[in-house]
Image (cartoon, rainbow over all chains, first blue to last red; front, side, top):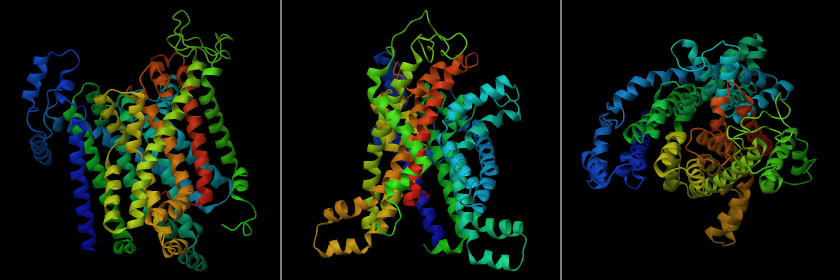
Length: 305
Length: 288
């Protein structure tokens, strides 16, 4: 068990280091960073000044080690545009993104768990096919477009919910629903296949033979076992949702980390872009690590592999 | 795969699957429109007519018969732009799948075939790729290098290979130990021969399932990137770009965003229906 934990942890650290390196390389792709920062109207002297002030005249590996050393201490430098520490900027906006991600995940679970269980219980029926169709439709839905359509319908025509911003709690509902759409297909399919497997096993037959109620069999014996993979995929999906929130935050003008990244990208504010990529990647790595460890605790069979 | 054991051939079973038929019809229609675009558009999709801006579709109040789907904010014929948009989506989808397929299948087959250290490396690459927020990185690269059609293809291709690698790896592992591969080894053929003549043909159908799903994803992501202004550059009529350009008028005339969005949704739905039918038939396991 300890060996499994250590090995898994070592992989996570290695992946994190690789992502750190890639995040550094990402901003060096433009060829000359100083020219990109200076913008199209800058003179040659401006570019030279920027190169000196930001330390871009040093050898690349010196810049890399310097950046890596600081990043490991949580210091992502200063934003060119906002004139603030990048770490501060992210810390202030992270709660919005995290809330959005959790609301999205909660909606996705509330929809996909019952759908998946229902489809499994009536496997092969029209109900099952209908649930499959819902999953395919969810997969094909362009999230930014769905966001705009929901804005028109619920914000403008019905006037039930705010069109943008999160000054009040109900501002999270529409973006949360849109974000949930991206996770519903895979969560529903997984719940369904997990339940089908669980319901066909011997312990379910034993429970039936003992004369337990249908509901008790479904929830206590069936879903408990089907839930293990669902928990781990839910964690992974939360990571994907946080990464994908940039589109939805831009559509709904939610001032979270995704919106910050979007603003920074359009203003050539690379330290912020770099840091957001990194933070979102690290959260994903942590979530998948957590999911794997949780899985190993819940399901002893996985530890040996 | 003996024909006698099955009541119907694979092709026959697919044709009786309603999802497959609908999906094939949608994708086939989009492909024909994309190929024939220059010959079937009623007007030049780039021709601006500022006197005839935001004319509603002909089936709505205020519409005119000349412009079946109306005109956009610059007076360009919406139907003509929509038809050219199909071309952009299809080409981006296909080129992205080719690029990401080459990367993912190479990595996955090598990992699954050789195992050991090679496999550890491949799994590491997949894990790293999955931890990188794709949309964000694609946007950043587009901003740094200046967005263009080919850049979108390249970036999406370099980002969407993970599922190809996962499925190629697991299916290669299953096949590596089968009797006919052992028989090939015994016949003294080269490693290259085993890989290209024994392994690849037998995992090809599973890879086709992945190809459809990745194509759907690539089309959606291109639209999202273009919507955010860092995908296909204007005046190209990408559906995502059309939605983005029409966005400020959507509260007064919602059809301006409904039409390109619905086209996008239907095309992606068609590709997904195809993929789903193939997956049902093959039993491809796409869970990580």
